[in-house]
Image (spheres, rainbow, N blue to C red):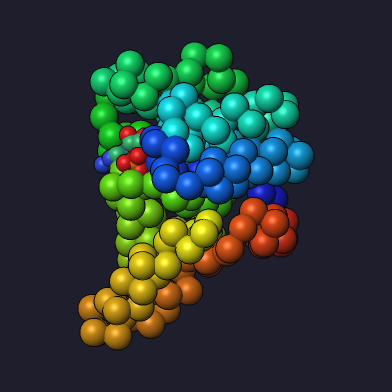
Length: 184
Ligand code: AMP
């Protein structure tokens, strides 16, 4: 049975409008370190990305950051990670992050986070992977997204199983329980 070793975190490059988003991002970083997992993320030092990574790294987690050359300055790419991969473009970034992860966690974020979420969801839909996807619904932030996925299914544009491809959890404590049992 595969063991959970690396978790990929997709999240905002901004902190968002409620302190709970950063609090939960830090709690996730601490969990990743405490469990001995590696954090795979976008390598930036901004927004929730920065919060997760500083927390994980500060608590001793190994980190793999993946960032395209052109975002090194804008997203303040970190060079002090366990491993830093600099890619040519965004597509390669997502691919490298995905390939090096056993599970995907989606924290609150903007269009970039949505893009990343829908990519792994659609890859799952067409059978390209079976990696677990968790949506951290801090303060109900993703409730409209979940409603949108339900709407897509209700209106016949996706099969019902799509609803089960991503597991929605309310907080990091609930996520911890899921992740510990994720891959056996
Ligand atoms: P955001 O949620 O918009 O703050 O973006 C979160 C992260 O997703 C940032 O590191 C963005 O650079 C990244 N991102 C934005 N668009 C894309 C894309 N098309 N492919 C991969 N990553 C993206």
